[in-house]
Length: 259
Ligand SMILES: Nc1ncnc2c1ncn2[C@@H]1O[C@H](COP(=O)(O)OP(=O)(O)OP(=O)(O)O)[C@@H](O)[C@H]1O
Ligand SMILES: [Mg+2]
Image (cartoon, rainbow, N blue to C red; front, side, top):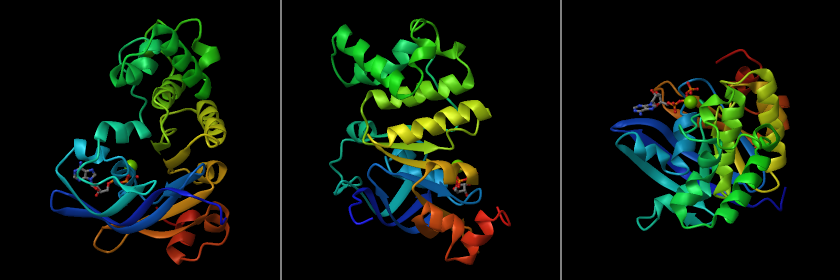
């Protein structure tokens, strides 16, 4: 435990859409090379929370943030921060696979192409290694130039993971990445999370308790109070959260009595 290094340190974070506060006072460390699951009832602010970690939340609405989010020691809410670079370092995969209407190859190469000039041979290598990293290479290597929209849902989600991996992020944020997938595709993504952990840090929102216990090292349980504002109730080792929660609200939730 003592050699864990926080990749992201969240300090007393509150978040508002317009004037409406949706999460309050969240402090949490997301450790490097570990998988952290974020669980909790619908509307408690899980998606909002992970979207504050690479400031993608600002694309949707007028928002206000209080507190700090440090990424390896730097506050990502500092005025001088380069948002494109930040979002390359902290990538995101969403609930619904969202491949671009382009070829499989172009989808994966996309981020590299906008980031700078690469030779074809370099791009080929990056695309291959990202597709291998996302456990998709064998299924698509003979049809890289066909449309990504022709892939199955599970393949599309792994393609989105490959697209995120291609720019070599340090952290991958995943918002219910398996909720649109069948059990076999889900299993493939879960296996992938295990192997990716040696190279990067993962924060995953999931509604599936079994999934949280299978894939994560740490778990944060969020809930809302009477005023419907999301808060973190408990954080700990995943085994402890599920077997021996300290807070009754966590116990009720993980035992399926609530949410
Ligand atoms: N763009 C937005 N503008 C205004 N309010 C929003 C916006 N997105 C979310 N909210 C509100 O913020 C609160 C938290 O929503 P959020 O989507 O983060 O919850 P969640 O825990 O991810 O829920 P679910 O499990 O259903 O995905 C909700 O009350 C929601 O209505
Ligand atoms: Mg959500």
